[in-house]
Amino acid sequence: MKNSKSICAVALFMLLFGLPPAAHAQHQPVDAEGHQWWQHAVVYEIYPRSFADSDNNGFGDLKGIDQHLDYLKQLGIDAIWITPCFPSPQVDFGYDVSDYDAIDPLYGTLSDFDKLVADGKQRHIKVILDFVVNHTSDKHQWFIDSQSSKTSQHRDWYIWRDGKGGDGKSPEGIAQPPNNWLSTFGTPAWTFDAKTNQYYYHYFYPEQPDLNWRNPAVENAMLDVTRFWYKRGVAGFRLDAVDTLYEDPALTDNPPAPGTDKFGRANQIEKYNKKLPEVHDAMRALRKTADEYNSVLIGETWTSNVSQLKDYYGANHDELQMPMDLMMTEFKGLHAQQYRDHIAAVNAAGQWPVYVITNHDIIRSYTRYGDGAHNDDIAKMMAALYLTLRGSAIMYYGEELGMENNDPKSREDVQDPIGKIGWPVEKGRDGERTPMQWTDGPNAGFSKAKPWLPVPASAQTHNVETEAKDPDSMLNFYRKLLAMRHNEPTLLEGDYFPLNNDDPNVLAYLRRYKGEATLVVLNMSATPQKVGFDLAPAGFATPKLTESLNNAHAKTAAGADGLSMQPFGMFIAKVTQ
Ligand code: GLC
Image (cartoon, rainbow, N blue to C red; front, side):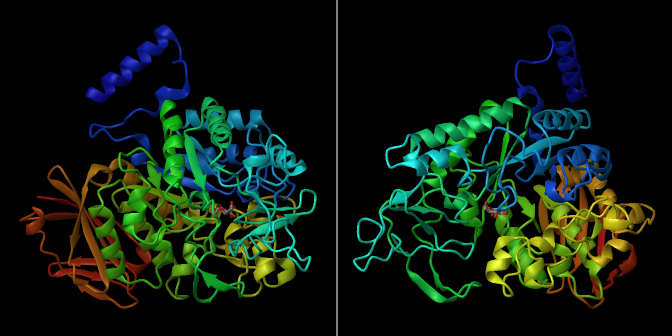
């Protein structure tokens, strides 16, 4: 009642005084627990090149996204994160930005973008953009100027250094890079530029020179970029590659590590060019600006433990609201104990978790977890996991269909440059970026033209049109699960109470809120399992279970002596006294 009164008051205010001055009012706390909208949100990641092609040139675009907002609404999405759609030479498919304040013509225009934001707003779908903070394209005006001379205005906006030997030449006359750092994309990290006889640094491709965040002018310019988009109504940013914003100014060589990487190079510990403490200063500055616009920051935060992840929230909650927990994407195999331990650690850390099981850089979850025999059941079971845990969730387009990876079959077919550099060990990321599967028709209904990447044969069965008709499809499972997540107070607000802590096969937990709970039971094994629960310690001495959802194919039966879980079965029930 209190909420609806305040909604009425806002509506009355708007009628009397018009819209509030900035986009601020749209991001206020939404519930009685004081949660912000993003704490209950499911964010849907869209790779715009591959989502929907409105002009039939083989590449997706903003209008294509706009035309499918109703689909996303029906699915139960609260926000879309669009991977970079700014002007770009597209060497890294948009992650090489040549102008931060415009839209790449491949994807449309600024007015298409404004329309998308407005149409999204009507449907309560917010738009989050991807901000590439670590580097620009080498075709960005800043870099072009920086490269032009040692005294240019933007020279110090990037990392330029003499090579070993002082002038970029060794005594033998051969250019030697300033230190031993490596680019994560399989190339050297330093590129020599004969024009000024110096090297510039790039953690990614040579076409992605690193910005020098130690220069206050860079920070100011980047904060201005965020303001430009906040004023256009974006609800926040996903910050790309934050770990590599700063480098050791002394350029100390990285120490060696055992083994070789997928490009065959000797491993090293990235001690001096990754996760430097100054990264947190940049996060705080970005957050301060985000707060001026009541916006949210999601981080591409690769961490190896929960304590590292915790740092990204900021000691005073003044960094990222939503650093992504990407750790589950690196688990090998499905082991209940591994998930149980991780979730316990995340909850003990006391922050608002952000679970992710896949994205545009990682093999699709369907392929990663699939065992070939139970793929759909496993995908449903994993969806039930990341969408019923306490926290926010980020899903990748096509997860709701069971889209699988479609890796290139030969080096000639590869589009992603790392796949060309690292073939065949590293096949690149094309496989997880294939066109959204809308129908069982040509090109999966994505485009009338040949799409930039081929669709897999499984698009015949795993597509929106076909799945919409099947009550047991992945798509309908996701719709039910997301509807439950949005409407069920125990899932929105409840605590996390683990059950049967010693069970090696079945992960089970309660989400408890105000004397009720949701029970989630996930059989992570390929064998049938029998489970029973003592819910008394959780506050339910005489529990009454009402089934809400299971993965129909692997149907789970509830009997007097417990649950019979089929291989990779999942079961969700409402628990009342
Ligand atoms: C991030 C992006 C990835 C991109 C890289 C360089 O890791 O997710 O797709 O290639 O940054 O911008």
